[in-house]
Image (cartoon, rainbow, N blue to C red):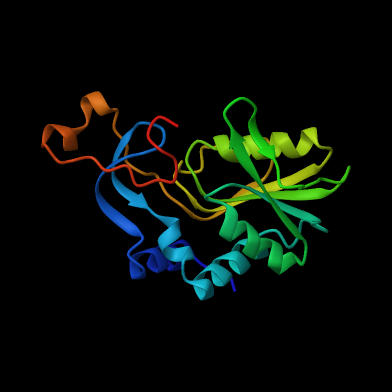
Amino acid sequence: MALSTNETLQLFKDTGAYLRGHFRLTSGLHSPEYLQCALVLQHPDLAARLGRALAECFEDYGEIGLVAAPAIGGLIIGHEVARHFGCRFIFAERDPNAGMVFRRGFTVNPGERALVIEDVVTTGGSSREVADTLRAAGAEVVAAGSIIDRSGGKVDLGIPRVALATLQVITYPPDSCPLCKQGLPVVKPGSRPPGA
């Protein structure tokens, strides 16, 4: 049940999750477009479809014992990928003093084969942190995946990585943003507060 890039993006358009305007990304850069995965994943049937399609990208990777994701963005899609594999799902949370950590009693078994899954990759920072946290706990991190890759395929995590749709999103530094020069109000639509 593979989904093409066009089919994936059509789901975003159909649910109003492909936004056009003037946005400030988590990186601080500005962009005329934004993909809000939460608006797609609020529909359980679409979340299941995207999770199944993403999981199928890893079917040749052998046994997967654990799927881990960064909170908040990776929660729903990570859970759906784990459902496909019939394995456990855990998530890491950002601690201001320690980076990504596993809380809530989550454990990792030494040698456990794990995938890192999130909704959108831009710089790969969250996926990299979750992978490092898994390795520190003794897991073997097999690969990483996301619904959307906004980096144009440039992010290198040192492990295989897949996305259902890879885009080269236009971005501007705030001091040379043509949208700012036009006087268009800037919106911060992501899950992290500005500056986080």
